[in-house]
Length: 453
Image 1 (tube, rainbow, N blue to C red):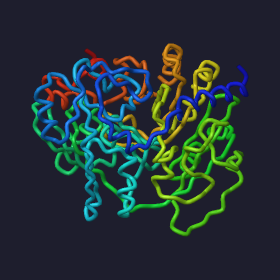
Image 2 (cartoon, rainbow, N blue to C red; image 1 turned 60 degrees about the horizontal axis):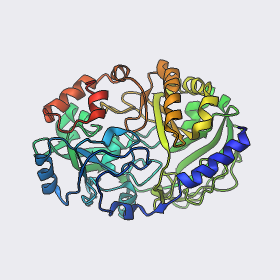
Image 3 (cartoon, rainbow, N blue to C red; image 1 turned 45 degrees about the vertical axis):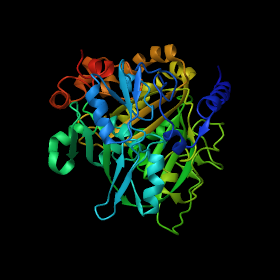
Image 4 (cartoon, rainbow, N blue to C red; image 1 turned 90 degrees about the horizontal axis):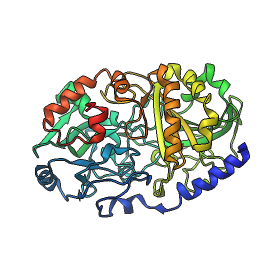
């Protein structure tokens, strides 16, 4: 398939797959969940016969006490079995409180609250969170549990904003963790992969609200990344590079910058040889940008620029697969070139790849633990056998870079290799045993990838 035909076909598939049904994020959160739902992508049907949807924390406690096995289900945006259960799942969709403490600069949210719901509420009161993922419909509790991230060389993943957690443990007791009182245990409890307990509330640090602009440039040579990767990724508050791996180029560079009210900046016509887009763009060339956040340097609230897609329109069918690997950013260019060698095996099954920067953190199970990272993300066509065939090839190319796969996306990295990537894995396992000695919150994913059982 030649390049033009590939883009035409990819755009057509993406039209039906990514945006075939447009739903309001708040409407989605009010739907009563039922057992045997699929995940957001449709590539996985959950196995639990019982899906509980408690209305308050007391009911969460009752549910935990009566279940021998239980896994929390968030916005169903995981692409693997991390949220699956052979027995019982629990949805926190009804725990939707939002309590802002303006004096402490924190907001405490129920575990069912989505970023798309939270953002306009705190913005109206003069506050913001430091980072957002590319899609706004994911829940706060689900995002932090898997170290989902957003972008920015100075921005930690979403979990780095967590100041406190309320959790129902395996005995049905309510426990709290905070950065102030729990020290190292807190650092192990935030990105907990759903294996510590059922999170019922999350307290986040907030900062004063701000405005942003977004500008897109097209056709950046990958050669420019050899000596300028850090400068390019740091050219805005949040930066994304999109590529289909063909023609040795980055198809699009999305640069999101903070601006002060009334501040005006001239938009450069070129960026390291890439040309400024003259219209709003979708990450896949040739696809309609109608549901993408505003570009062209138009100022707007932080929550209407940081995501790639508009807050009130989220792709709800999501017929796709996703994979992502985190490498140390100081070797990012080498990693990109290593993956590029597989371009002709990758491209036929790919919608698009996005490359982003994430600041190092100290959360034990975070993919960016103690490492300023570059995340190489693949959005695949819903072709499971073909994707699973190419993943080991990519993982082998990235093995010299100690690439950590995203916990909630598709990967084939062996548990033995995975354990070597996390120096705090033994401490994390000990913390899980301390709070869940019976393994109530374990599932096949946790047993295989964490406990290697």
